[in-house]
Image 1 (tube, rainbow, N blue to C red):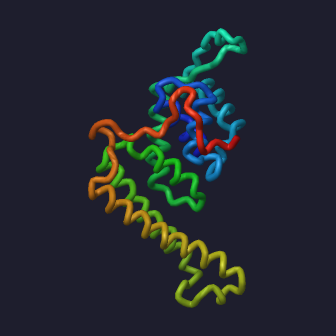
Image 2 (cartoon, rainbow, N blue to C red):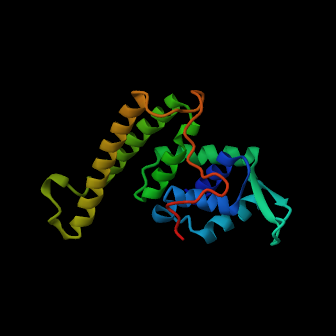
Image 3 (cartoon, helix red, strand yellow):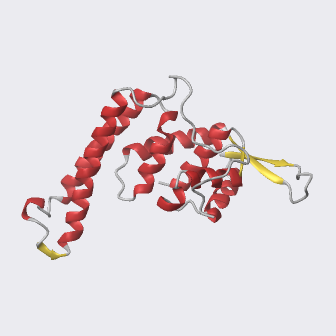
Length: 205
């Protein structure tokens, strides 16, 4: 799954129209440069690539009175919105060892309805359990990592990660069931974007 596509489409969608620096600033504000491949080069490349693919439309904006090249603002298309929601749903259900997939999904989950998110997270737990079953066919956690020599520590780490991931997901489900956050159709959700000219305290510099 392309995390950078989900992040960039989601960031543009939240603004309505956004230029590359705004998208980069938002993703840095969320710390995405620390937990994903959302680096400046990949962000600008994704914007241009998705504009070519019809997922975004590029608007050339006149240069500022201070001079400088024209600025390009991007807007999500109907096709882009469809791709965004497909990636978002996938990010919440797929059990991927890389944390960027789930992190990106969590950042945009309120764009979906509460009941749908609960269903997707339940699917995620099933995916984790299925993954764990496939691993424990040849690795028995109860026997400890020593059964495979020091290589067993790898399996021990991943099984432990799966177990804690399932536990964390169950706790998130309970928080959402208990009324946490504002989801689609429930009113104005929290939107973590920076205003024009607002300084980003978490920027990569």
